[in-house]
Image (cartoon, rainbow, N blue to C red; front, side):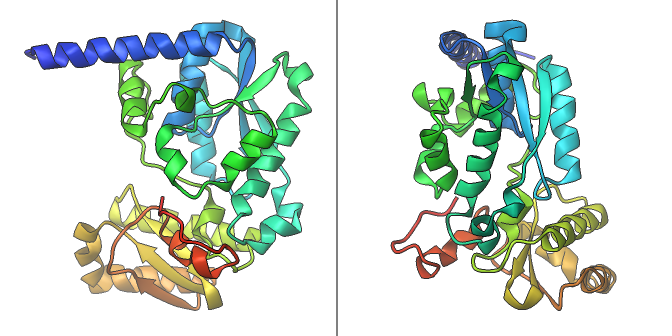
Length: 292
């Protein structure tokens, strides 16, 4: 491979960014990293290990909203990074405000995680909590950021002005296995606002997405649960034609009906992360919100 000056400049800039992040995290002292196993939290966890060694710990919230496949990724990534890993069974499904699934549902999820983690700080031998929020998150609908502020959770990527593209550069710089991992929000985020979040619905969504992924090989897709148990499948626009096949169409419809969806639809607009946020202005949250 031939390296150009542009390659060299990019590497130099990323090296400097990595050093700055490590030093920034070092200044926090011993911390717990809110760790989903996605690229953002993995980069912060790696920086914490570089800065603090065994004086840091990754904390993963385990509940019905976390797909089993995502938990396995988090476990593998924590092992690869070399960070202590603690799984905390959170109880957000016990909170009526969470189950009601208004536009601020995410607040109650993060509030639960941060509150439970804060109670364990002494046990974990750390003094604070940090997360993987980056500057691109600031323009999105993120009620969880309010929970972070209330619990004094620090966001080193935001504090250093690091965006998603730079996060992926850092992940590649550190050879993290999740460097190219697509975003995978919690299963509850697939349920339309105003439709109650239940254990049965998130489990149904998890099984439906796993089935479609197995049948198609697609990495990015969503099964959205709309009102009246309607499934709205989102896949990349270029993959829509796969579903014209009678075999695939029939198999998906049969499987999702068996799981409990009354109707199965394919969204011709294709995959859009955060598409359910389109409904936010009419679900108790006056004012339009940018899609995430």
